[in-house]
Length: 239
Image (tube, rainbow, N blue to C red; front, side):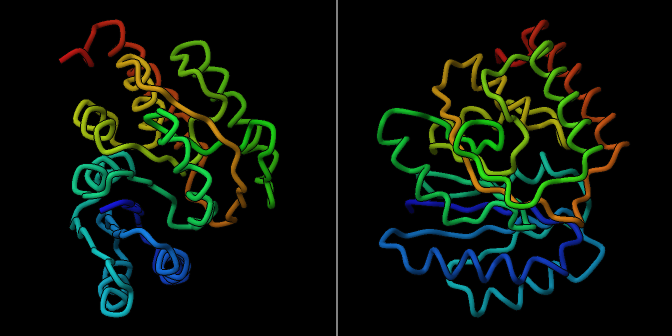
C-alpha cells in the first residue's frame, strides 16, 4: 500500500460525502495503490451511516466506527496506527486543504524527509478564504505560546494536512498522550525529540465557516501545550 488518507470525523454529515467523493475522484486517477480511512469520533448524527453507504461506491474506503467521542487527536492516532500505507496523510473532513496537494508532499519523502506538513504561514501559501479576525488573533497568540514553550521548528503547527512515513508514524503516535486539539504540537515535539526530519511546505487553504474550533477550545489547547512542555521536562516521551 503506497498512500493512506486518514480523515477524522465528528458530526460531519453535512460535509463528509462531498469530501470523500473529492478524495476518491483524485486518488482513483493516480497510478499508486491507496486506502481512505474515515475514523468516526462517536458522532451523534448520520456521519457513520453516510460513510458506510459510500463504502460500496468509493473504492478502498474503510470506516473505523468509534461509538464514543475521544477527541480529534485520539482518532488521528488510531487511524495512523491502523493504516497500511507507506505514507500516511491525515486531512480535515471539511476539505479545507484538498487531497490533490499531497502530490507536492510525496517527493520530499524521496529526498529523505520523514514528515511533511502543510503550512498557511510560509511563502507560497494561499489562503483562499480567510478566517474571522478574532480567530486569526487567537491563532497568532497560540503560535506565540507554542514558540516560547514548545519550539517545534515550524511556523504553522495546526494546519490539518500532515503526512508521515510508515516508520515515523509507528514510532511517534504510540507516544502521543494528547487526545484533543493540541495533539499536533505534541506529535511535532515528539518528532523533533526523536530527530526526525520535518519539511514544512505551503498549501492552499480555505476557511470553513462551520469550523468547530471556538474560544473555549483555544483555551483548552493552551493548557494542553503546557502539558506537552511538562512531558518534555519529565522525559515522558523517552520510553
